[in-house]
Image 1 (cartoon, one colour):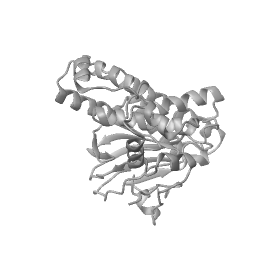
Image 2 (tube, rainbow, N blue to C red; image 1 turned 180 degrees about the vertical axis):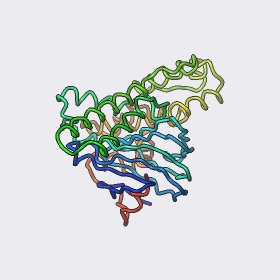
Image 3 (spheres, rainbow, N blue to C red; image 1 turned 90 degrees about the vertical axis):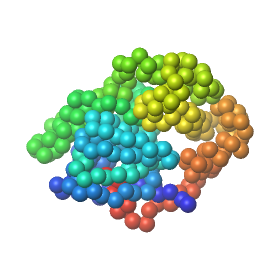
Length: 311
């Protein structure tokens, strides 16, 4: 069964329960959607989907939310941030009564277009850092929360014009820098520090093997405790996280090189090209060759309402 692609633009609304702004009209083409949700009643869940070309940032303020990534459930508690990369299939499976959440889409593509009117080198490093955040789930900060609030306040209170565009651009940059700072903050727990080093190694060297006995030794934790803390820090258990790192590295190689699919599979530690192709299609809905050629095997939803209901 094919999966829906959530397309842009959204249905931009301004109600007591849901506000969705399009900051493209503020001279910020990299922000096609800025949202605030405050549900007075529970809402239905939606199908698993992706947001092509857009990073999604969700900051939970109230409520307990459950996100699903390829069958893995991830709980988002108040004060926590969840970052979803453009090519990650996901869905918010719960929209509970009393939910309060800020969220934003940040357009990372096209890769050669600078964002926020930054010099090209600074724009490139910002996008690359956002693409390679060390964690997808982490504790937020007051700075991040205040940046979200400031964007809405500027939109409401500041008169349209050049100054508002300048102020909103500065607020978006501060929000993104606060996001990066929170994602990169070192955990205070010694065990979490050891796990953070393991996570970084997996990201840098996804081609390596990481036997569970080696991981438990390096983390100085039991297997069950390692799995629990690893999932809390990354949203995934160790093997699934490693597989996600390999999939991301495979995408980069498929996009940037002419290496044969078999060579990429071997270089990233897969037992065979068939195993690699199966895992790749399971993750992205396409075979590696089809993904490289730009073909699409996904379909868009028959109604925009399904995607609009995501937030």
